[in-house]
Length: 165
Image (cartoon, rainbow, N blue to C red):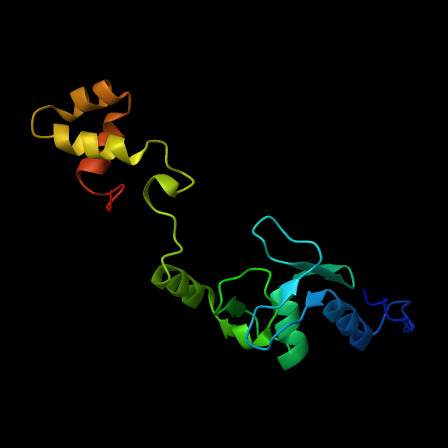
């Protein structure tokens, strides 16, 4: 394990930016240029590395990008080609907007759908059953049979909810 650098403090009794960047890279497992460089420090709930500097907490992929290429303009984000949240390899990172991030997520099929979505109350089998009963029962009777609301049955039958199930 590498020792922490000795900091020289500036007039505000804080380490300089150069020292903070050196300290940051001590916590990155740099291996091959083409492979992901994993953050070895603390991570947030979504798996992104977290790094504190001057009282602010940064996501490590953004800190890695900005310390290498410079600060981003407001409204821009640092995105991963590799889709690996703890990766800090600047060759795997690119700049985009939230809209581009959503498009990238959808193209790579990383959007939870159906019963894997966090807000889903009923499994896919309920959706399939409701649709199969639609020819023989009223929406009210289907809702009663499945123990769901009439509104949910309507949204499933009209493909407003669970389009792909």
